[in-house]
Structure formats: C-alpha cells, structure tokens
Length: 296
Image (cartoon, rainbow, N blue to C red; front, side, top):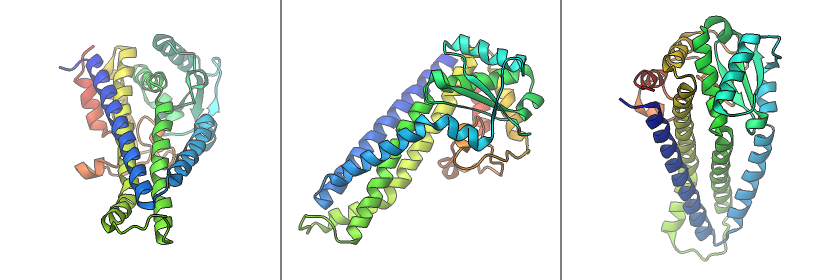
C-alpha cells in the first residue's frame, strides 16, 4: 500500500519531468521556426510577450478571481470555526495565515489563489460550509493550503508562460509563412512543411501538457492535504459529496474552473481515456481511490 509520502514524492517527480519535457519542446519548436524563417526575432518577441502578459496576470491573480467569483472577505468574528480551521492548518503547514473569503454559492466548493504565501487567499462557498461535516471541511481546506504551500500558483504561471510562448510562436510563424516571410532562400520544402504542421499541432500539445501538470498538482495537493490532517478519509468523503451535488456555481466559467477543488461546471464526465486528456482535474473516482488506498 502506498504511503502519503510516496504519493507526494511521486507526483512531484512527475511534475518535474513534465516541466522538463515542456521546456525541451519549446526550445525545439523555437529552433525549428527560426531555422525555417532564418530569423530569431520571432522567438524573442514570443518570449517577451508571453512573460509580460503572464506576469501581470500572476501579480493580480487574487484580485481577478475574487472579483470574478464575487467572493467576500470575512474576519474571525464572522465565522470563528472556519477561521480556526484555516489558522490551525496554516500553522501546521508552516505558512502565514491566508485571507479567508466566502462565496455566496449553494454548490460546495473551494479554491486558493494569491501570488505567494504572504498574499494567499482561501475561499469557500456557503454550500461547502452548510453541506459538509467538520472533518470534510478540514480536508478541503488542507487541500487548498497544500496548493499554497506547494507554490502551485507560481508553477501554473510558469506553465502558462510556456504555453503562451508556444501559441505566440505558432501564430507568428503561420502569419509570416502566409505572407512569404523569411530571409532564407528556402528550397527545403520538408522543413517548411514540418514547420507548418508543428505550428498547427504545437498549441494543442502544449495545452495537453499544461492540463497534465494541472492534474498531477491536484493529486499532489490531495496527498499533501491528507498529510496535514492525518485523515485522508475526510477529503475523500468531501470530494464525493462535492462531485455529487448538482447545485450550479453561477460565477464559475472556463477561465476559473481549474482553480476549484473540483470542477464547478457540472455535466456528464466521459470515462474514455482520450477525453481525460482534456480535463483540468483528475476524475473524482481516481482521487478518492488514491486517498482511501493511502496510509499515514
């Protein structure tokens, strides 16, 4: 039987491997486009543009998502029990006390945001507080605290930068190619064809790697959160209740759904392996099975 420590370590290694593959992928793509067009300027522009836009999104990430979800801040006197749960788990994780927000939503759900530990936010819905038991709420909060402790917001931003570089590179390459750009007297038709195919498929490949990393970080946050509470069943039971609740989350959309502990966009989830490649979260059944198969 796998221990929580083994699961957490395994997911960390898998994330590092995916990031390494992603970096190699971006470098090779940039080299191919630069070779075909006989210019490195496209690579420089793509990198600068992607970094600039991603840093601005990262810096204001908490304000963007909190405004979008209409989350409201609370103080200790507003909900002493919730505040103590967050405070105790933050102390256990060794991070500063995050700000606590509540969403006026019936669907049980939660998310964490913020550019670093000192600017972190944990937000939960009213539905989560009303429909889950204390041990289940602790499991959910521990999962979100784990995201903060594991620096997942920073990691996601780095991945978004890489995806942005790929998309921008591909877009620039296709536009320049359409207008007959490039200084090379290029008789290498094969290289041109490979460049066009890569420009079309690369953004899809980059998105798939991004989604895969997101799913690995969810598994890691599950394991890390269970280590904080020492009670995996609390989170496992919470995930089952959250996923089975059909209440809508009105402020959720495709741009912020990945932040929540479970996708707030309700609908039938396909069981096929191909459809799983496009999921931001691992299937709930797999997460629950992992948690119940672990031992402290």
